[in-house]
Length: 535
Image (cartoon, rainbow, N blue to C red; front, side, top):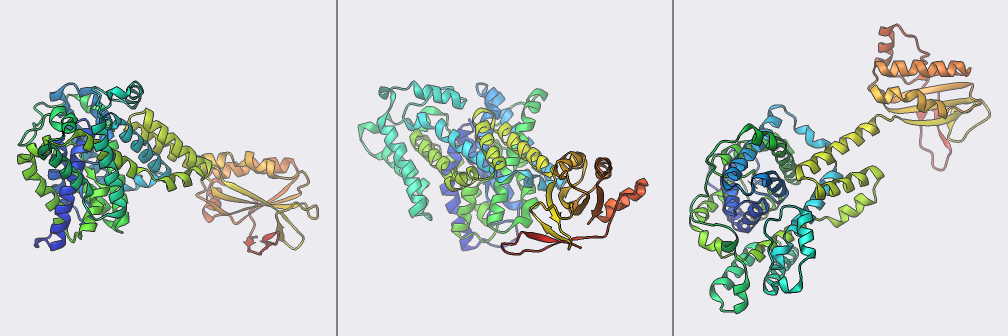
């Protein structure tokens, strides 16, 4: 951060993000299976550190909804052991920070380019379903104990009877949900979540209505005290570290994707490595003071822009304002009705759903549709980090399969060298254009794919490689096998448009292939079956 005073826009944006972020941070901590005050710590310290080290004035760091469920699943084995839970939380935070720094050190940020949009959309859709479903018991005023999976939550919801519900709590949650949804549409610049929170506190403190006594507050569901939350008192063992390595990378991976989206929206992709490094440092610093893994918050980063942030002072101020609330705000936080938090989280889940994008993906090609469906289903039935890694791995596999299958286009050649898409009995001369990679698997299967494309009456075949690329030794071997097939059938073969390095490889191996200097010239002619000319 430059040594300059904050501007008015920085103060306005910082205060807006801090106040609106309070209910989010509390909710996301609870979503992660942790006491709510740790959410404020995660927004305060990593948020300030990232602001000091980072570059963008429109990136704020703290707890997020997408990483919350990964954290919940990762820490579940220690959920009933408070001391071990804190140790696991710190360990996960350290591993998430180190994962980001490792990506920066290896200059491996391009790894994020291999995550298809269908996978990200599927992950966000599955996460939205889980977040909403896991909050339905609090939303209905009948909170469950010990629920850790979607299946368990769904089963217990099915068993609920109307007499188990508290309609006053449901009404409060519904009001919170509708206020946020409608406020986002009609009053986007208003801090609606904060106003809902303040209104619910006023009802708890100052109104005598009997139905308010039925509201379950955070004081009844978790321990909240003034002062800094308790820190971990022991070191992790190797078994715990091993169990958290993959989740730590998954948290960093998904959090980094949120960072990429934020930077793209601001045309600040050039700062990706700097921001990744700042978040790595921020997580390491946060692990020392009781923070769980922090990432870029999409919603609060947007608020920085709306508030008029000019410099890195804005996210720093947002974190700084939370410090006195951590030390002196326990009375306020204890009085928050749990139904309000449930309503805010369901509203967050709804904001993660993108109906138009989902419809587009489902209407797309089979590969894209498969990626989306597999990611959604795996998000619902597997751990979050397993789901996102499975989706990314499946995307890479589909890409490799597609890249390993060169595209082949056959034309008939007339006496003047014009190419036609329809068969011709005039010359018995055909041309096959090969497009795509010619290495490893792509080259090895080439002869088996070319042979069925040669008509029985073929006497001459021109193989055009002008659109083939990345040839390797496997391509030479594949061409030799194909030439043997053509020689056996009495077909004369010419290879044109060949890459220079392909001929160089053949010469180095001492192999002579039927190279020719002809070239296939394509042209576009409306409603004309002629595709081009061989000259």
